[in-house]
Length: 269
Image 1 (cartoon, rainbow, N blue to C red):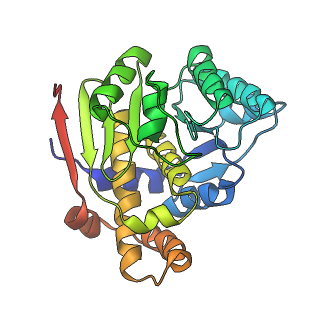
Image 2: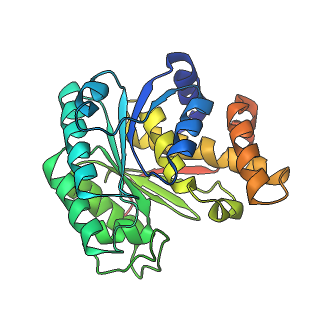
Image 3: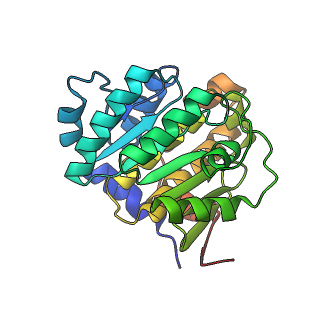
């Protein structure tokens, strides 16, 4: 399968979808910025009194438990119910799952209460949500002694959704179709919020592409190709972050085609 990444980026730029966020307070500004840079329209509404109404005018909903509170999760449920009724994709970034009992409890609560279309996390976060007994280092991934793709496939089948594991190699699956994305740069690990921004980019792409596995893979390719381009002209984390936004904004078909490192396969055991 030839992965036409740029076509989906073109749709984002042309359709300018509204991407509603209930996200991490630490990274909220960067999440809004990355969506805007792509050409989409971010909205960061958290109040329980308006989240359902806001979700009804959105084309995707991104939830991130990075700075969760019990009340915040209740607002997430209200927004997700509204998104489910409208039929728009709901992306859940299980940020920090495996670090504390509260994060685990609220992650499973969301998954059991509302329909989540894409679950996104690093290796240890997804392993924990898959039922493995792992401990996440705050919001950073810990080592997982298991076959990550098998865990992701099992979770995708059980939850009837797409699953995204980010890392040195990103894995995206719905249990039948699988993508491996090998783009990105080590500098991304030195900037707070690249994982949260990745979830927002996935939200923008899933707003315009019904094949959510393809949407997520294409989103990560674009985000990580931009990171590679930024690293070439940066002196450190601060300039890297600035240049990454510029490179994403200026991303073109020729650059993506030349730099994308993505593999596709079906039902690999």
